Image 1 (cartoon, rainbow over the protein chains, first blue to last red):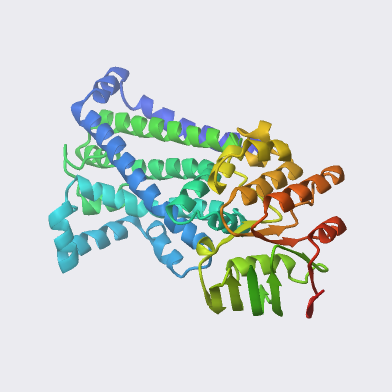
Image 2: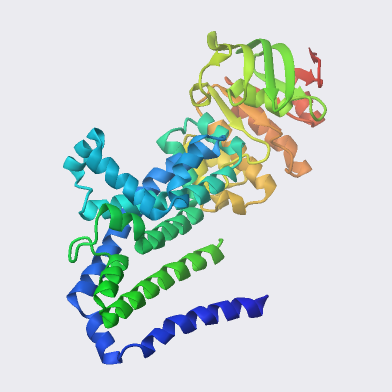
Length: 245
Length: 199
């Protein structure tokens, strides 16, 4: 079993490192300092951060409610994670551009073909990833503890604040999962926010644009950045999982 | 003073009652496993489905199915399994309950654990934290579910005395299987899986 794990990791590492044979090191270094690459990096980091904040704030109370009883809402709330991302993006695009309510909202938040659209797409797709682990964490809290807290007059916001302490580890872990998913989001973002250079150009969208124009050095630099970022986030997540104290 | 009339309550597929009883000071609840002792406390607090009339100090807090939410009832609850909030420190638990009383903490032997998370404490110490929380609360009714299980036998009498002394002016409903508690409280409601009787 252990051999298989190492073999799978090795195969993936070979695939990643073999990209370095496709491009000269100086071209890669130059591409890494390219304004377009830096713009994509900054946009990805910032939009993913905002999306993670929004998702975690919304998912926390919703996951608590879902954990206290079965709800028909859960499959609906988890739908964006099971649907093709492009279908989620198309739904959002048509909603914001073709429906009266969506169009009214779009006139305020400018979701279509702009940066807020990226945040909406990332949040929609990554939301279910926060919901499931938080719900499981809340389910582990004994009903009697909640009743005791309420008997001390602690309910509503107070209850959520106290319960946060009980699910803190899973909350941090879920927020990293949401962040990494937001960094990787492409299908829904490109459909709703478009692929516009120096405007809605996140790391995945920059990879797509530069692959189309044949700039291999830039594509590989963007892949390298995406892989490093994902690796760092996932390593922190694994570290938190191991630190169960 | 608590007045409970024609009270029926349920847990999962089991239904208990109807019960009618009064508590003026202290009441011990005893009975075999499955007789609905713990469920009675939860039902009085409004945590599980129930039907009947509950009156505290002349004020009706439940009539029929409708009643105040648990947070609005004048009752504080100490559960059997997790008597204090395990993911908070002792100090945070006590602050939540109503504040810090150095003398009480000294009496209960938990003063030196203030900064310790409750989940790191032994079962007996957790019970003491739960008892302290109940006694610090301003609520008029204290619901205790086996607060002495896990407490060493030598300390039981001391803790019974602390609870009885410190709960003066309040009503205590105490689920127990310890004879010394039954003797100390005087009045007992013995539950049976189907019937109940007030002795």
